[in-house]
Length: 238
Ligand SMILES: [Zn+2]
Image 1 (cartoon, helix red, strand yellow):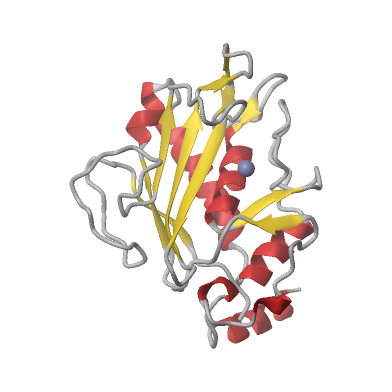
Image 2 (cartoon, rainbow, N blue to C red):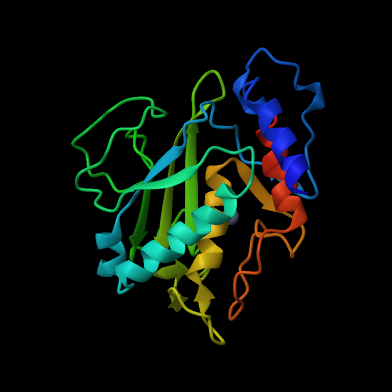
């Protein structure tokens, strides 16, 4: 297993990821890899993807900062263990002082727009606010792409309250850096899923996949499924 990953690394360093070549032959781009569609395209540089983790926003909705940070770092480690995708990094835990990132389209420093607008920074924030555009969602990842199909920015919002279709609110009981009990949602599980979107994956139809579109309550993060690994390795293979 290890040696096959090493071979993949060598191939990857010689060519851009598949999503980065707008003039490329797209005929070999499958709609699915083991149930996965692709949300968009790949990051085109291999020097990592920095995210600003806004711990203050998590504390503001009652989630402990240290636990949120450890769950997020642990979630990044799951994807970073794979050979091909760019390394995910928590570049800052203080979004009031965003850091620059060579992968970003611009350095629009100074804005503290939390998420869901293109500001040149990859942010991971929490919000109490109900977002009427995302009924039933406990977290949302939104990405922007440039004309060459390269990922330019990805923002994640984790919600404390999900909006039901009838317009009422449902509080999510997040298990932060702990094993979820009945009725709790495992934050680590959620972070791995949303970071899968950051890397360009859409939802899987397989409920064993971390990219399945619903997270079961009371269930601890089960690890990446073979399809999760195959999809992201394919997306970032040359
Ligand atoms: Zn999702």
